[in-house]
Image 1 (tube, rainbow, N blue to C red):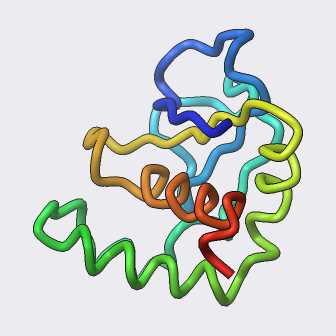
Image 2 (image 1 turned 135 degrees about the vertical axis):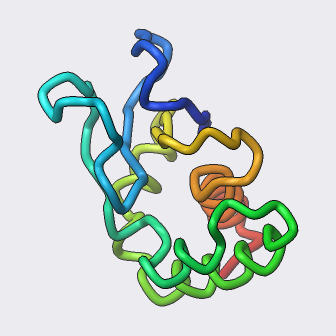
Image 3 (image 1 turned 120 degrees about the horizontal axis):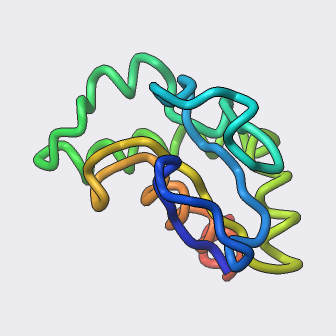
Length: 120
């Protein structure tokens, strides 16, 4: 099971394995203060794609298409996440203010497609 959580929300036992899925370290948080399994920088969108998207909801569908294409080329970057998700609950940590249009939402959709076999 995959769930999403902002890095600024307190950790909970129910989070399971926590992965930070941002290219940049979140502002205002010390690295020692963020409990997580790993920081999967390479699972985040490229810098170019992140800048192009700019969290503009009107670009959401195209952002996901481009991001999924990047992920198709770099599946090894998300393999730790996939391995853990097959064994239990995984929380994807992100810092964006927009709860509906961010890379963690898209990544969750992508990984769920992989796990269900609907994405090859």
